[in-house]
Image (cartoon, rainbow, N blue to C red; front, side, top):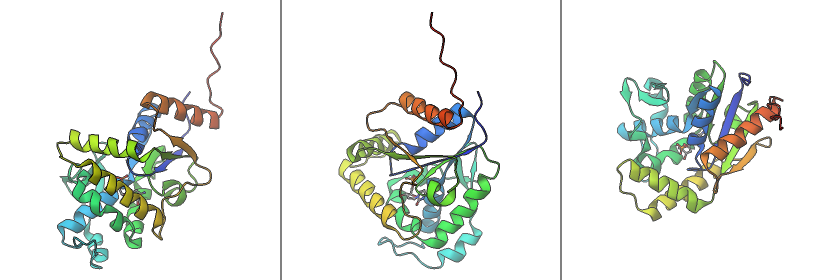
Length: 234
Ligand code: DC
């Protein structure tokens, strides 16, 4: 049975598998998937290219005005574009990862991104992942999931992802970057990462993707009373 046109918010720490999970659910239930972290990464790449963020993470206040001329949008499904340039690969490098949390802590950056996220999701039937989707961006989302996993499991996932993309990461650096991002993301003043009171926690340290989808399907269908009748036996 088709589930209604709702909004699903998926939040959690870095590398807990939010985007893999959200993509699968989007495919399974025919939803639009939106990756809010990609937008913060896009703004970070922009700030770096414009020379508006220093190596010590000092952000030039000129970034606020410069954002007025920035066009970030999703095309070809979930690929991020800056104007007509595909920046999907560049926003996933360690260089961008290492400066994205300070950028995402800036209030005017957050409101710039939030405006765009609301516009992208205007048609409904959306699953969005990030850090503050269930608390700030869509506080009324009908279904909220908060994802966690043990730090060493998360660092290994991130490490494997970087290797598969041809990078040569050092495991300890990946772990350090994760811990730094966790700290900044959950201690910033504006919309810190935290579990919404009505979110369901999913710790997927020891779970496979099939199990995660089954868990979400039970959660969503259960919520809407759409559980299929049990099969008859005999
Ligand atoms: O999910 P990700 O690792 O691609 O996110 C990159 C960074 O963006 C993350 O360190 C924190 C920030 N972020 C945020 O502050 N709020 C969101 N809704 C999504 C991401």
